[in-house]
Length: 180
Image 1 (cartoon, rainbow, N blue to C red):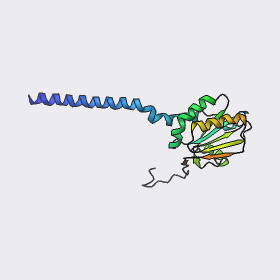
Image 2: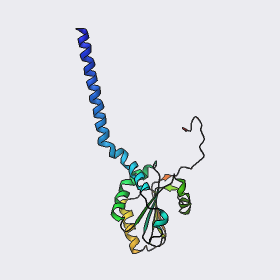
Image 3: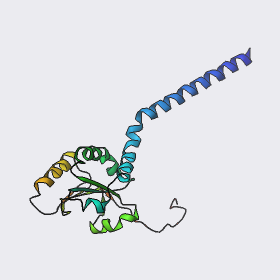
Image 4: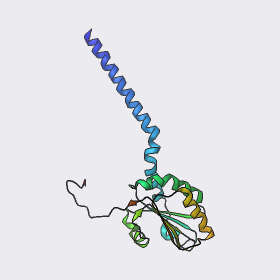
């Protein structure tokens, strides 16, 4: 009789483990967009971005964003930026440059990027009109994009907010505390 009680107990505990495991998987699937979407959005925006050389020579205004996949503010803004891109991409070039990619160092130096996200807006002739540094409201960016067609009243504005400082690209040094 005792062996029968042990056997049913094991089956009951295994059932509970399976139920908990199923609930964990369901909750991960339900909340995956909240957790993973911004990271994948940033990566996707960067991979599908128009080349800067093309954007600056095709006689369309240009939205240029410097970002990093580790940047929390960049990830927070990614869904809004994706919506803006979808709304304006017929009339405006959208360029996304990852600051961790050495390929874009010249652009980072030319536009004095030291905090991210940094968004630069250029007119049709590739003249810098406004720079946003840090977290911005969707409304502010849209108003500025609308103004690109009406030409800005003043030259080269810089609007700063909460941003992430760019991590220095240092040669890899391994030590017990460096985690790599």
